[in-house]
Image (cartoon, rainbow over all chains, first blue to last red; front, side, top):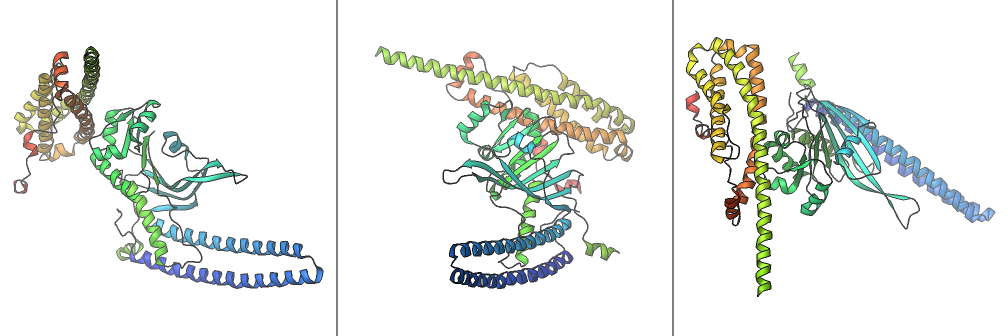
Length: 321
Length: 190
């Protein structure tokens, strides 16, 4: 079954709303506990500091101990709130992903970033943080993987002692094991202007591919070992979809066809599939945002004519039974 | 005055040589693209005997169509000079004719259930689709190369330089024959 624009059936939506209501109650209770406990702890710490300073005259020690207790309390509170947020995200994402035909894991360690890096689809980075690993099978039986990635580059700061990490990519990485073989490597990269293209072109062994669309050529630069293969893969429909995706993404998508795999890097400038913060209300907007992120990712898969094989909704199965 | 004249002559020589380089590079590129088109067209030619052998067993009443496919294949396979635009045009026209005839053959074969369901025919149709997809890609490569060559050869001073060095504009490899470009009348198919 193919994916429609509103992919959740009424049963799944009702389940998600019920689960979200439970999570919202937990969130509100935890946040109240945090506020109440915080007020009590701060009150006790301040009173203790005053007493210790007055009785024992150890003002500095009292301040240090008080500060430590407050920080430890804050850290514990943040840990509990983050744990609830992660649990809520895993539950909601797991359910939404299942309804759309994906398997979901919060942890995405082991996702092969090296292939993306080797093809030059990612900016230079020193540290990666991958999560939200989604896997699915396309209608034609190909394996599709998707992760949310944050890549950072190390830099030295004069003001700070240690290294400073600056985000250089926050977005989605998509990998499809293509069933149709392609003999050569084709890369669709962000256009870097006449000078930039000429400079990067000198260092490459493959050659630029000049396609028919002027708009496409001003947005992307295509490199391939085989001019015909590049045109077989980049049909006018795929070119049009690449341009559509470029309009929806902060950074221009970069696409690679290599070693029987299709790789897409989409820099969105913000993490995907996130729950709202604990001090914000968790309402239907929370999973609608996750659903939008997934729709966007599916749009990227459709770019290459890939549809996810979606399971039949439970309500439809029940009706049939 | 002499200096100005010398600079002008130098300028003409530099521009002329630059243009000449562009023309030759584009002509070679167009010929390379034509060679890659031919590689894929040869695959189409190789497919024809198998399809015809199978079709003859079932399509006894389509003798005329089968004979025309054979004739068009022979015409398309005839050797030609890649440097002569007229001969290139003739070759590409012959290929277009063969493509139209093959398309017609596959369309007519739909009326023969035994042929349509034959395993070999299904395989042949699958291969045909793959070959046609590769030909379409090679055609795009060729047409892009020809656009560049023709632009360089048809804009002044390209016209003059091309005339001197014997570079001629090349023909485009059009998609299909004129009849196929006409709007489809739904009533004909109901």
